[in-house]
Length: 378
Image 1 (cartoon, one colour):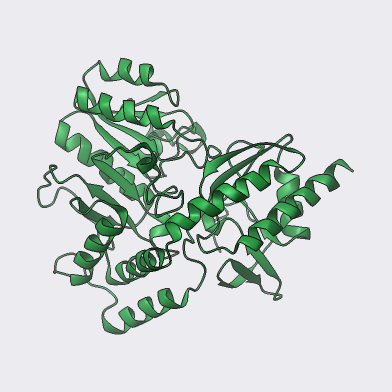
Image 2: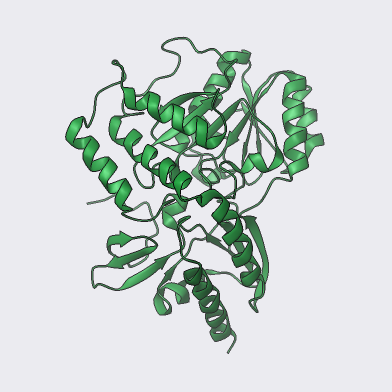
């Protein structure tokens, strides 16, 4: 039997197409969560299915002890679509692994041992990634470390104070805090952060695991602030469900052979999946669309009676209710067949749909939210 480590909805899903998933009874649900922002181009996109199917018929796996052309193809395409053609790519399997390797690389390069992270941060569940996550409940004693210092979000003075100690290898920050409830770093703060890291010789690590791959109206959320950090991590939407992670590394950073490594990272199937995602996003102009559609639906959500605040960029949206959100989320999936996400803030609903979602489906979700909240107060 499975180890019961997740709080599960009583839903047994069997298939999906676009932004719709079906349970074992054939009941359709509108998917506004995409499995933690993973589904970027929709469930079972035909180009995506063909790319993986074709690749497994040629070569499903070989280790990184040989040259795999599809890795070079992915690195070039990612650099082009993301706007980082001169950066180098390290491929791995998940966001946590990407963050772990980025922080490790920063420590190797600087020779320093300390990391600055932020209140509300979530960076993963591997050793250093979870130590840099602001949730003591999921940090085991073996993961506890004095190497990570947490400072207030959007507080440049607090960052400067820590950097002045001279032992900081990296400052890690999410492009948008996701698990915390969709909290945006101020553009000016990100610009200050980049300047401070340069001034004190620390490396800025932008965790774009949830906020990347076009979700916010730019390929990466930090691009709204016009900065170019030395290390950028990604995962989730890059694979549209196939496990893949990556670190984009500034061209001036040298890595010696053996410094980083992975068995399954960059395997041909993962690369085929990611290439398909990038090509669909580029060809269908989904990045621009996410920004435009997201702005409109956030305005709709903000007009719903009972909604206290709406935050986000593009299709990464947090809706704050006046009361705990679980009764509303339950009504949405039980009565309106709409799946949403929650956050560490008990009042916040997270909306993280595929970038291909139809606008009328989003309009329907705003109407359903109004009905669900009205029913609670009736």
